[in-house]
Length: 330
Image 1 (cartoon, helix red, strand yellow):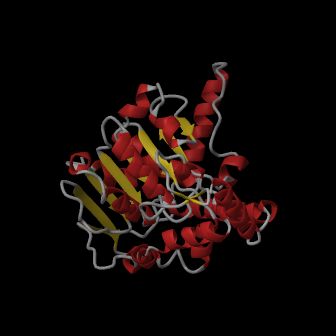
Image 2 (image 1 turned 30 degrees about the horizontal axis):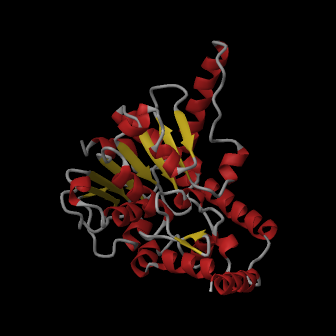
């Protein structure tokens, strides 16, 4: 019997292999899309200010003869399709600590990984650079550390972005399109489906299909946030989501126990979501000139309309002041 099962599994692997494209062809395409989204991040997030502040602080460290920390603004970080966790503290050098494994983060001996009370998620396909820029703004305004969840970027994201993910993420979320697409690719080409999914695949009890990570809560970022909310000694107190990141926060919170969400403050920027999590307090902001956010309201109204557009980059007014709006939630 066992021999028959092994033969069947080998036959399945052989069949699946027929649908696989070599990673040497697929990964560069995904990397190119990630680089494109990194460029777009400079529109939606205050990347110029982040880069300038890193440069100034690194100059001061160099003058003191201190070893410079590795940064998230080199080419390998900007083009990497894998997600990560960025623990950002604007007030304490080296300012950014990067993690690539959820279980490793949860078991870290460093107390700051357990004490951070604020988490952020950015929008469609955002890179480490855009995620860090939003978290930096929040950390600077609230004078507290912030954990930025960097969305991984894989073939499913590339497909949905090509089908209009930028302009219809409310519809995609409603239809569960990301989960369906990821499942479909994992069914026929699991090696391809694993690209960009290392972070979500590292959550405790990750769900897989033919060895490729698939989603429990609609997206990789939602799965990561759900695991962190559930398994940390104490859950986050403030969650900030911009654009599609707000939808990912909503998906992550829905199936948590009430004691893990009671009193949590959910701040959404540019994408109101359903206020359906018991015990959560919502602070939702949408710009009067934010056509993208208004397209994806889906009947969910913000607590406050702001005279802004979809961007949080003050160099492109009228932009949302992410840090100021997060501060109002306290």
